Image 1 (cartoon, helix red, strand yellow):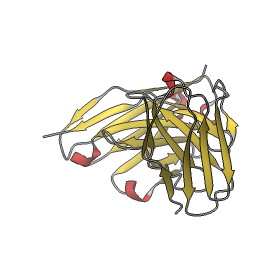
Image 2: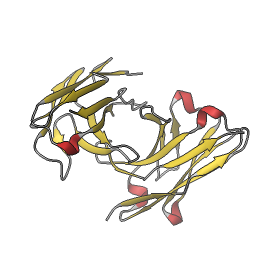
Image 3: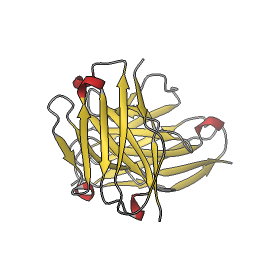
Image 4: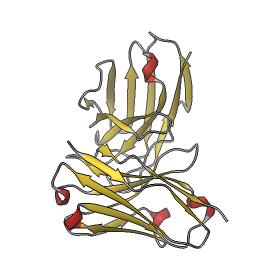
Length: 118
Length: 107
């Protein structure tokens, strides 16, 4: 069965860097794009962007250009989200979500909570 | 960029009732719309895609409709397990914006 398994919770200080992983299984990794979605505590879902798992080309939503980076380790069927120079407002749960045939997100990771606190 | 305006932000309904949640897009999204349900502390789950196609395993009491810029999710005969938050999302173009969400509470 198709699964997306994300890395565990992170506690970081402002200015530090975090890298979250999303390991896919049950399908051919390079056949479907991978998206990242942010959910701040008590807030709604915000699409951060996606990465073409075949070409490796990332696309970022405007609010996530600069400190955010999507990457891949194709041999391990794993996508990564890196956030540099962490700020308090980066405290959130981050989800990976796989594109399906028409672009809807049928498969989601379990989420990774990143807490940024001095 | 296309913005998604979802309403209501919250609603409370009784078991057995019918509820409707709506989403308005700021431009034509050509039925490239999905609805998700999210329960507290869990990942969102796909309910409907392409505006009206039910995802696998979704009960038939859920239905999606709409076209152009106006879409809705209807839940017939509300069940206790239907509590949670609901989000619409378009995937016509990037950014694939979500609506602000609707928190459904069961009376």
